[in-house]
Every structure is written in C-alpha cells, then in structure tokens.
Length: 138
Image (cartoon, rainbow, N blue to C red):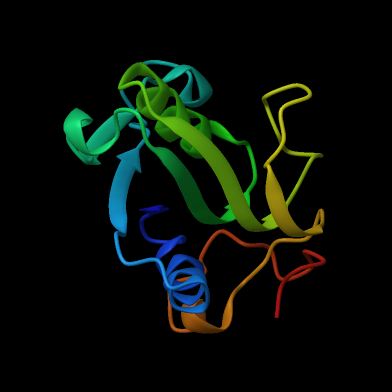
C-alpha cells in the first residue's frame, strides 16, 4: 500500500489495520504554484517517494482521502507504472465533477460527492479560502 500524504494517511492506516497489510509506504506530492505557469499545468514535485525496487513487479493500493482533480493520485500511479508496479486506487470520496482526467476514476471509493469534505481529523486545520456558503462547509 502507498498512502498519499497527508490525506491518505488516516484511511490508509485504517485499511492497513483492517486488511492486515504490513508493508505500508508513503508518497508526498506537491504541485508548485506562483511560478509564472498556470497552476493546473504545473509538473508535480515528489517530496517523498518509495524507491523503484520497492514498487517493481508489485500490486500496490494507492490510498488518498479524496479524488478531486485527480492530479495527485494520477502522478503517483504514473510513477508506480514507470517503476513497473501495478497500482489500484482507493479514496473515501470521489468527485467526478472536479476531475480533470476524463473518464478515469478510482478503482475503489466510498461515495461520490460534489461537496467540499472536511474530515474529523482536519477540523483544527486552517480552512481559509473555503466560502462559508459552500455546501460542504461546517
């Protein structure tokens, strides 16, 4: 299993415990902004990623909390495929209305939504920029 930080750590930990998965890895990805390029055209920056030898020839469940635009999970699965791994994707919530990846969708998901989700472990985070009239606020 590969958990995408930060969002995939809690659901990944829960799945790992429930499925008795002992080998759990993390991937940290950032999309730079403010570099004079369109934010959606930015190349991902991998801050942390397992070495190819840990991925090659393995089936890997890639876990995140939400599939919004899909860019982060696509970057992670793409890098796994380049390393000759076989990724499957899993998220709590899938938002097909925000996805930038056409017909691509997670292999496993808990629910489809268009709401902005604030998970219980995120309530103390800075939620600036979320309009208070947004359907998923509060």
